[in-house]
Image (cartoon, rainbow, N blue to C red; front, top):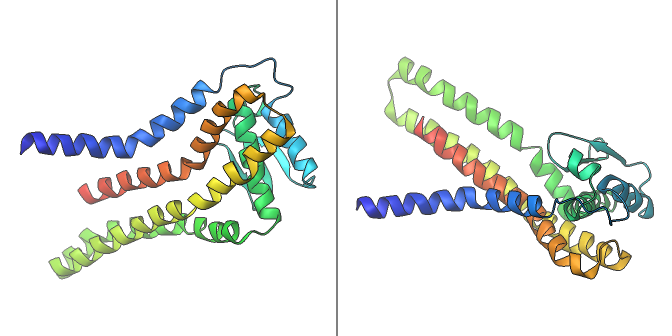
Length: 226
């Protein structure tokens, strides 16, 4: 039984941590400097935005992870992707520009994603409030059944975060393979020999939200243990 428990635990850890490690590995592998590329990721992002008629969308540096901010209408890239000349920089820039295109076209999936993402913060805050209130409620009414209900509510609220992350996956896949990869192929921004590496980066970019969902599962287990 002990061996089975250890195997199950290792399997769970691999499921939860594996995707994050894989994403980091792919980005690091494709992040090697390539002076032969015609421009940086930031320059490509600006070029693609202008070509799509999105001159009003800015391109900025960030330390908070590559993303498109629909509220500010800004494509934000990490320094190594904004200023770097690498396959990763090119692919990530194209992926984030694809989100700006989805927004500009008011695509239903992207609109739904925006609505869902706004729920992540409130869900987490509500879960924390309920969790902190558990010992106070128990001290006041001494009702284990009510505590069980509160714990269940915490799990539902945190589980909602997992659902939000998971439902954004189609939007990410479209950004990577419905928009970014075809643009890179048609525009000749990468040599044919570099496209397989770009596909791996785009796959990693699309699965980032899935990795975030798995991190949230770890968060749920941590809260449950507490």
